[in-house]
Length: 380
Image (tube, rainbow, N blue to C red):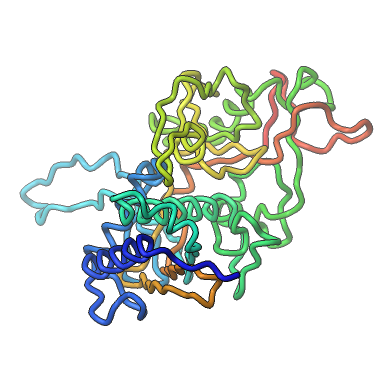
C-alpha cells in the first residue's frame, strides 16, 4: 500500500520548499533546475564545513575554468630583497608557488532521496528545514571526502555497488600522488607508464625488521623514514601531520571516550558521529609529528602532509539543483545536486604516502619489499 504524507508532513515540506526557494532565488521554483547564485553557493560550502570539520581544515574554493594550472598555495618563504638606484624598477615575487601541474574538474552528482515516512517523523521538529539542510550537507561533505581519499578513475556511469567508496567518481588525492609524484609513494610497484599505480608491494612492520621478513619495527620508524625522503624544505615544515588509518593504531592513540554528545537528525544524541565527521588529533605523535584520523581514509595507509596542502576545487557557477516531491518515486522527496569539482595537492614536495602497510612477517621465501638499512628501518 502506498504511503500517504500526513497534513503536518505536507506543511513541513511546503515550508522547506519555500525556504529553499527564497534562499536560492529560484524564480521558477525549485522543482525546475536552478543555478545557485554566489551567495547561496558559498552558504552551502560554509554549511558543509560547519558540519564536517575536516573540510574546514583543507582548502575548498571556486575556480573559473574546468581545466587549469594548479594554483599552488604553498607560501614562498623568501621575499626579502633590496633594490639599488641603478636597478629600478623594484622586482616582485609571487607569494604562492605556481606548479607545472594541471587540474581537471568533473561533473559530480550528489542526489538524495527522503521517504515520506521520514518526513512525517521529522515534521514534529519546528526547525525541520534546518535539520534537512544539515542532513544533506553532511551527506555531500562525507561523499566528497570519500572520493578524495579513494577515487582512482572517472567513469561515464558510476557503479556504487562495485565502488562503494566512490572509486570511479573522480581522481582523488592519493591517486593524484601516485600519478604525479610516484617517488613519494611507498608500498606499490611502478606501472609501465612510470606511475605508482602498479601491484601492491606490502610494507611489513614487526619485531623482525632486521631480517628479510620485515621492514620496520613500528609505525614510528616508518613515519621517520617517510619524512626523511621529503626534500629538505618540506622536512622542516612545522605543519606536517601524519594522517593514519584507524587499523594501524591502537586505542591509546585515539581514545573515543569523554567526547561531547551531539544532535542527530531525528533529535537524538550520539557520540558515533564524532568519529565519522570530525578530524581527530591524538595527544601522541607518530614519527615526531601530530597524528590524526580523518573520515573515510583507506585502511593500511599513512599520508604525511600539511592539511592545507589538500584542496578541492569547484567551478564557480556550476552548481545545479532541483528538488521534487515524487509520489511515483516510492513516495519520496528527491534532491538533485551537481557541481564540477576536482582534487588537488597544492605541492607534491610536501606529501608522501605509504600503503599496504601490514603487521607481521613476509611469507617465507620472499624478500620483495623495501630495501633494508643498517638501523632496522627500510627505504622506499
